[in-house]
Image 1: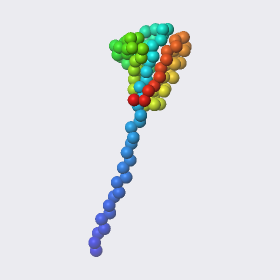
Image 2: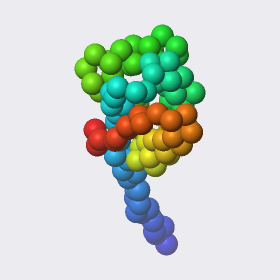
Image 3: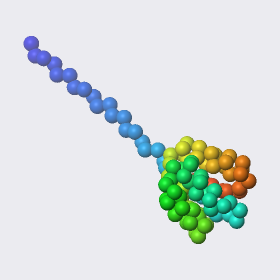
Image 4: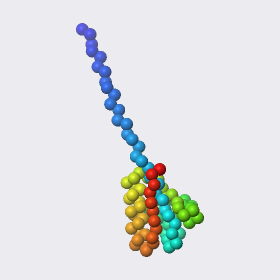
Length: 99
């Protein structure tokens, strides 16, 4: 009797990488440089040196990239910063842009 050879179907599930978003900080005339560095360190987990570089980008160019994250993480970080900025009386503006 001949043995039947069973073929296995390949069921491949391809995971799609999530869209990534840049979190952008915008310059204003009221938010202090120290506060911007503070949120970059606390919320965006930047080193103090990296945070200072980003802060100077915001100051000199009008905009700086705080980080690049998936949609949910980017939105969460923006909300965290907005809450802290409002508590401190700063009008810091953040946006996110699809990468």
